[in-house]
Length: 338
Image 1: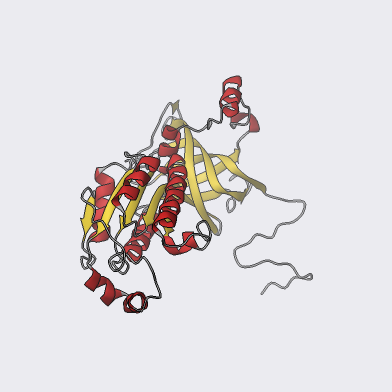
Image 2 (image 1 turned 90 degrees about the horizontal axis):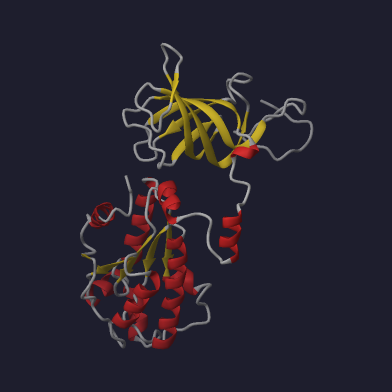
C-alpha cells in the first residue's frame, strides 16, 4: 500500500514521478513499430493504443521508412505487413505521459489494437516527441484566405481517411411506440464498437434543449425538425455519422429535411409498425393520448404519412434490423470505407 504524506487526488492507473525526472507529455510521437497482424497496416484506420495503464485512439500520420531486419537497410513504405518493422509518426487522441524507450522501457513502449477485431496489431517503441516544426502549426497565405472566407482547412477527404467513414444521416421515422429509439441506440452502440464516430439525435433530448419552447403543433414540429436537420448537416460536414430518431410524420417535412442535409447524405429508415403495435409497446403513452392529454398524436388525431421512398423498411419484430442497417452502410460505402 502506498500512503501519501499530503492529500492528493490520485487514483489507480495514474503516474507518480520525481519532480526532477518528469516524463514528456504530448500527442505527437516518433516510434518504431513491429507489425504483428496478418491484416496490413492501414493509415486510414484509427487504432487503439495501450500505453502504460491508459488506452486511447491513435492515427498513423506517416510511415517514415521500413527497415530490413537482416541488413538494417531503410526503404520507403506506405504500409506494413506481418513481422515488418518501420519508423512511424503517430498522433494520439489524448496526451500520453511518455519517455523514449531507450530511457524507460515501461513508459516508452505501447501496443496497437485493431478497433474491429481487438487483435494486437503491433508493438511499438517511442523514439521521441515529434518536433514542433514537423506539425501543422504554420498557416500559409492560401490557408489564411480560406479562413477569411469561412472555409475549413481540413478537407472532406482528410476527414474520411481519418474516420474511415463518410458523413451521413440515418433518419429513422415511425409512430410512437414503433421501436425507433431502441433501434437507433442499438445501431449507435454497434457502430461505436466497430470504430465509427457517431452521434445520436432523438426527440426527447432535442426537445429538452434546442427545441424547448416548441410544442407539437404542425408549425412547431416543422421548425423542430428543421433545427435537427441543420444540426445533422453540420455533423455530417465534419465527417460524423448521425443517427436521427424522430416521428417526422409529414412527408413534405421529411423532403425538406433531406434537402437541408443533402439528398446524397440522407438515408431514410421506416419502422413499419401500426397503431396496434405502438399501443402494445407503449400503452401508457397511448392511453394519455386517448384521454386527450396529448394533442396532435400521429396515428390518432394527426396524420402520419407512410414513406413511399424509404431506403430501408424494417419490421420492429425482426431481430436482424441492426445487421440490415450495418449491411446497408457497408454497401453504400458509408462505414467502413475500407
